[in-house]
Length: 90
Image (cartoon, rainbow, N blue to C red):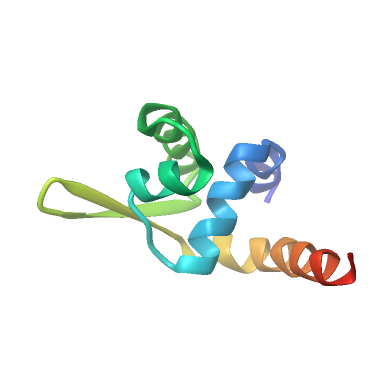
């Protein structure tokens, strides 16, 4: 749990995790487009998240798609619910 919270403490990584929660599965190029970042920058963040075991990947041709693992998804769902509710309240 501390690994997840440490990684989610970085704004970009939290956004990546939030996007994966919302979309279920994304490739780095889609994440880069949404966050208006370069693919290499997004890939660096994805590598750190994957090394912590929070996300997994699947390959389709030359493209990797990332999704949240079940354990990380449950912990992060509480954080994301809070984010969604704070946006509604504003």
